[in-house]
Image (cartoon, rainbow, N blue to C red; front, side):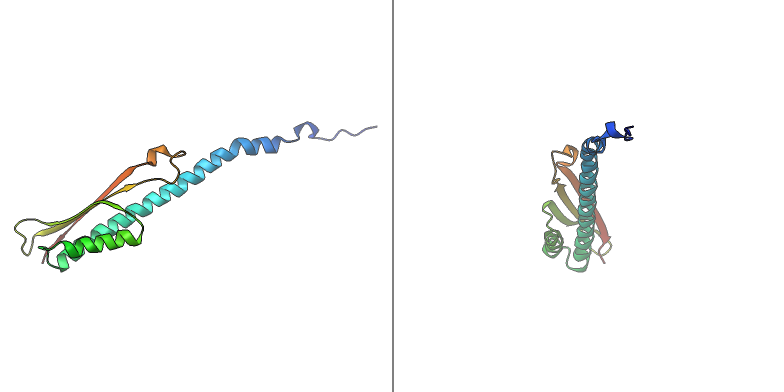
Length: 132
């Protein structure tokens, strides 16, 4: 008497299931990586704006070069290219006036085929501190 193996007709189903599920898993993995990179870039832009405003308050707000240099050094050390960087003081610039730093960056994804909505995401941060 011949024994019939259970599951004999299910040979290869795990391979087919893997082939069907694998693209979805890759999409989720790429999305997690790219959203993490976007969050990190936004945190770097926020820190650069804060440091730029602080440098503008500590140094002379009439000369924004040290504050812009500080912002650019933070962004450059993180391999982030700014779209625009400004540091201004409300006129007349005297103690009690606000120094404002604006940083704008365009985030681009590493995987534009998988995540086209993140292909060019503009990010902008502003920080104001009081000149004393």
